[in-house]
Amino acid sequence: MLDIPGFISAVFTEKPEGITHKILEVFHHQAVNVPVYRDFLHYLDVTPDHIRSAQEIPFLPISTFKTHQVLSSQMQPATLFESSGTTGSQVSRHFVADTGIYRESLVKGFTRAYGNPDTYCILALLPSYLERQTSSLVHMTRELMDISGHPMNGFFLDNLAEMAGRMEVLRESKTPTLIIGVSFALLDLADRFPMYFPELIVMETGGMKGRREEITREALHEQLKRAFGVAQVHSEYGMTELLSQAYAPFDGLFSAPPWMQVFVRDPEDPFTYLESGKTGCLNIIDLANVHSCSFIATDDLGKIHADGRFEVLGRYDHSDVRGCNLLTL
Image 1 (cartoon, rainbow, N blue to C red):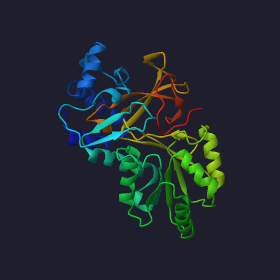
Image 2: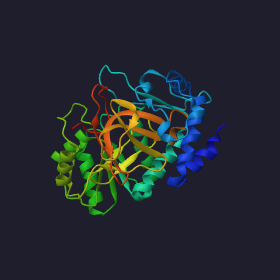
Image 3: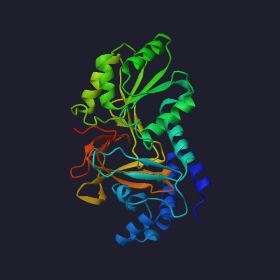
Image 4: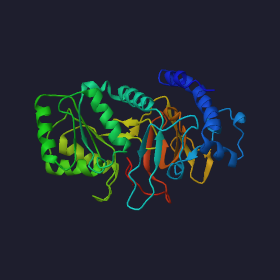
């Protein structure tokens, strides 16, 4: 039986080269204790004891989160994250058994990329997500704000003038400031209230939500850089089905924490992996998903670069369109 507290403690402190053993530990645990994943392996005629490497592990199609409760039989859900979806579409539902693991993954991952959240004032421009109490993006941002503790932290819906006024105060006081926002809302802010704020960190999470014409990530970033005088626009990669995030401080190239690993599979053969530089579908290992499934075959197209960073290029044809933090080329 997997010692969950010990496993989690090790995962978040382990050096990257020590993660491989942890991947196999959680695979064998989930192959027995997560009914949906156990059945999936059975249908594939996979014998878990024969799996000896991460590359041999079957990845659960992400669409399973739309049709089944992906959760260990040993656990009960403590909270629920739901994807935004589109009108009439079926949403993904991630039943989270331990919000403490989610928080630890979030904080440690953010700190690796940006330092302690308490060094920032955090402003959130997430109008299409605030209406949903089950949004993992809103939950993530609220957790970061709680740690930040800055009195000017805040969520904004359509009150862009109020947000711009707060940004002006922060700019004048030279307060380190992070804006987390969906693409269409950030563009609205840039159009109506541009300001020179070069110290600002602008982090887009993608998503036009039908409010604006879809554009490439590069075009989005150029518009935001011009509007706010920033050298780079940052990106966040995460999703309802994962409890960890990856960040791209520039050029749209994401770095994942050690407990989150990314592979690229052949779109025509899900059991074949592609070498760096080749475009395919992303398979993601997230060890923070210890109580659901750590092995997710996404519908996102991307490629891995030689230095280990990865790029997200769009969504594979035939997959459902839903609110997510990437732009389709």
